[in-house]
Image 1 (cartoon, rainbow, N blue to C red):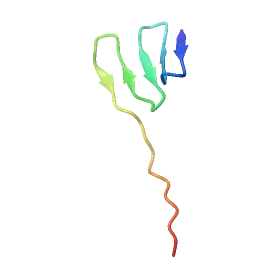
Image 2: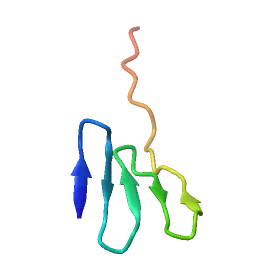
Image 3: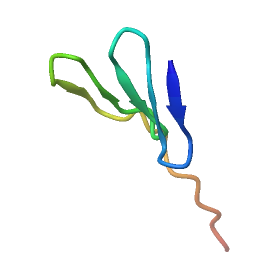
Image 4: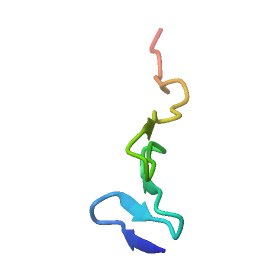
Length: 45
C-alpha cells in the first residue's frame, strides 16, 4: 500500500486507487463513484 495524503489518494496492494472523497479507480479502468452523504447546512431562521 502506498499513500499520498497531500494528493488525496492511496494505492492498495490489489491495484485499486482510493481517493479521499471515497471514489475508487479499479485496475481494469472502471471507476466507483464517491459515496457522499447529504450536505450539512446550518439554516438560520
